[in-house]
Image 1 (cartoon, rainbow, N blue to C red):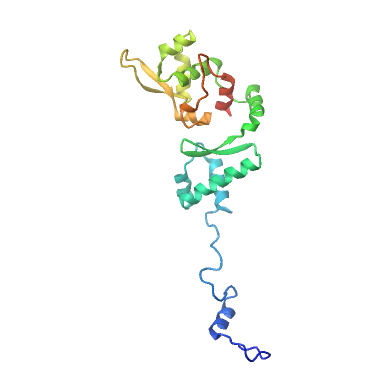
Image 2: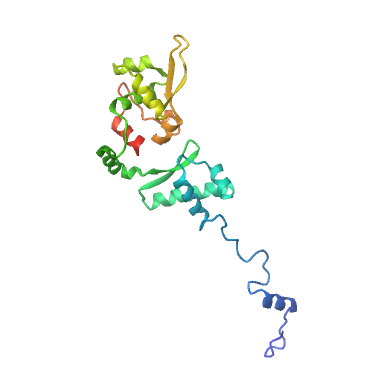
Length: 221
């Protein structure tokens, strides 16, 4: 079509036909006019990742999230990093962290005192003082035998060690080649509850045990 008020105007007939058939058509552009909407069953990839993290009982890996979401691992990792940065910037009561290769929500360190009050008020099942002492010995001196734990604490540790084994915080890790005694060490679950990647990240100590109340707060948070 030609503008009657401008006889010198050149119009491509094919362009005019496309414009009439497709309002999104723009001359000189190629490809789709807009990206496909997120089809996972969630408003966005970020919302989907948040929902899965909240539902999961254990930390979840990038690969697992990618498989469920049907997304690329790089996109999942970028989403996790972006969410973690947002929560930190907004000073939320929780934070998103990667520990031992998997992601989960943790209470924010800035709310530690409040969480500690909640825990010490008895509203959460917690380890006894004896169990905390034994767990600290195992954590800092592993691999360690029952006899070694008993010698440090001065009392028999069999019952307490069974409690730690049942909670998944300690496990059998081998035998003493000299005596054949079973040796114990901490588990991945222990590292996860403490927010550590390895036992090398435990706070350094000299000849004394760590602050057991702080360990209790982390284990029951």
